[in-house]
Amino acid sequence: MRAVTFQEPGRVEVSEVAAPRLSGPDEAIVKVEACAVCGSDLHIYHGRVKIEPGFTIGHEFVGAVTEVGAGVTRVAVGDRVLGCFQTACGTCRQCLRGDYHRCERSRTFGHGAAMGDLQGSQAEQVLVPNADITLRRVPEGMDAATAIFAGDVMGTGYHAIASSGMRPGDTVAVLGLGPVGLCAVQAARAAGAAQVLAVDSVPERLTMAQSFGATALDLDGVDVKKAVRAATGGRGVDVAVDAVGDPRALELAISLARAAGEVVALGVYAERCELHMGLLWIKGLTMHTGLANVIAHVDPVLDMLSAGALDPSRLITHRMTLDDAPEAYALYDRREALKILLEP
Ligand SMILES: [Zn+2]
Ligand SMILES: [Zn+2]
Image (cartoon, rainbow, N blue to C red; front, side, top):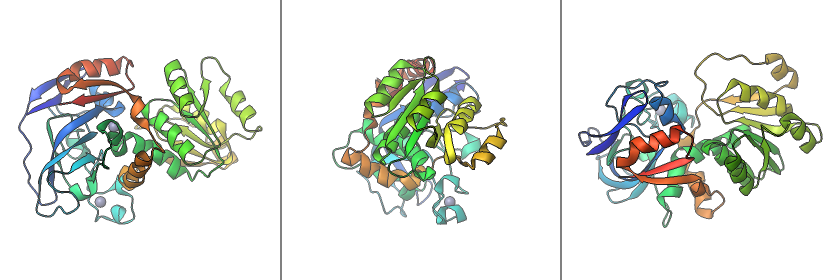
């Protein structure tokens, strides 16, 4: 079968690889209808996240179940399903507390040997371990361009708001309006935020956030701290989300949060970074970090997508075929696309 494989930094290719085969009773095989290119795929593309040459990339997918192991009970052959970006065992200490994102036996699709040695979903077929936990049936009538968001990007935006303890009537600032930041804007509005202040410097992204009900603040043209003070009676925001994963965005989030407010470091951090701990301490801020618990959120997110309370499908700016993957990665790398859907 065809699959998108990492070759070397800056180069992916469409390769002929062995089709997956069931090896355990908890597994399923899914014939991919659509997969997507994600910001974390770019970390691999750039060589920042190291994976083996020839490894299949991708972790977002919608498709049809073609085979299941004897122990799979929640999905069946013929079901149209979406996958979460990582698997969880369901039986370890963290899983039993609902912390699926930190499962002791978790494996992430398309991230090489270091993250569970699980081949990715930018392929004609994908092998899915722990299928009962990792897969969900796509609600009747929902298109792939909507459903695919539940397994990663919208689940992550939703997590920012759910983990922050945001209450209806709160004011939220979202820093960084990539797909995850824009999903956090939608999730905050859907959860009843009175105001969402959306910060970025890319005009199209600011316009998109505005169309989702946010107030756009252009980093290049506006004094963001001043604008946030003006919008909150001088208090600062109840919840500030760093959807970038950059110390400067985190520093700004800390300064925008009100006393005893919440800061969410949603973007990825892998290295040491400097923070004004005194400011965090004196303001009495609570900081939330880490991977999003997408498996725990996937059912409510699907319900909200079904009800139209969340609608991220407009974030898809390009639809291409699997064979166009090298071009898709180059486009995405040049920041010319927000979200790209690949169809095998
Ligand atoms: Zn992703
Ligand atoms: Zn587990």
